Image 1 (cartoon, helix red, strand yellow):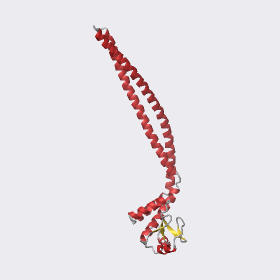
Image 2 (image 1 turned 180 degrees about the horizontal axis):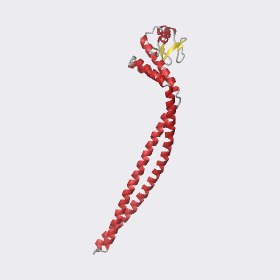
Image 3 (image 1 turned 120 degrees about the horizontal axis):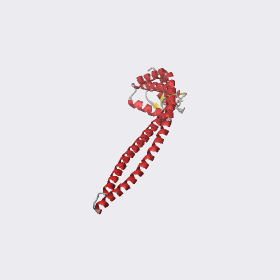
Image 4 (image 1 turned 135 degrees about the horizontal axis):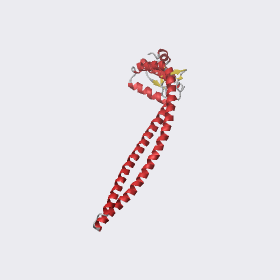
Amino acid sequence: MENKLRQLYALQQIDTNLDELEEMKGDLPTQVRELDGKATELQRKLEEHEHTMKSAFSMRDNIDTEILSLKEKSERYQAQQYEVRTNREYDALTREMEHAAVTITRLEKEMETLESKATIARTEIETTKSELEEINKQLEQKRTELAEVSKANEDEELKYRHERENVVVRISKSDLGTYERIRKAKNGKAVVPVKRGACGGCFTKVPPQKLLELRQNKKVYTCERCGRILVSDEIVEKSSTEV
């Protein structure tokens, strides 16, 4: 049990050091994530506008071809009217010409709508490209700043990450799960020493009897108020991040 407590305390010390290194980066990681999210969303919008424009132009071209075909047919029908011998044939050709004219009018309106849609999409493309270019510039700048800060502490961070791996493999999954849960809920502090008879996390006094039991290092004790894992002075003295 004492070894378990030492491992958990050592892990806490390592994570605290890593947290401090992360804090040195300031808001840069958050800024990079936010800018990256904006860039991704703008890229999605850009692709959507491009698809809309291409689709509108494609449909417009198809309609234009259909209109030309209808006009050619209408001209043939008109020429055939001079060759027919019966009123029935003449009326049939007239109906075909009228139908073609109505269809052409409808298709021309559809073409206008598609032209408008494509024009709007083209404008949106230019606007989105400009916004994306600006966001990418900001993102590149923030990434560079973050890389510089990270580089300055790279060796130290790698050392702690390596130490963390060595400690984690010695802790059971259930204990590690409990540690991570408390750490997440308590702003990174899951394991704390008892200082002057009080919890090192929330400073609540630990009952004398519990203090005696805690110093025996035979059981995992948690603070009655904040729920953090408590460790004795002996554990603090013996433990180190080099475990």
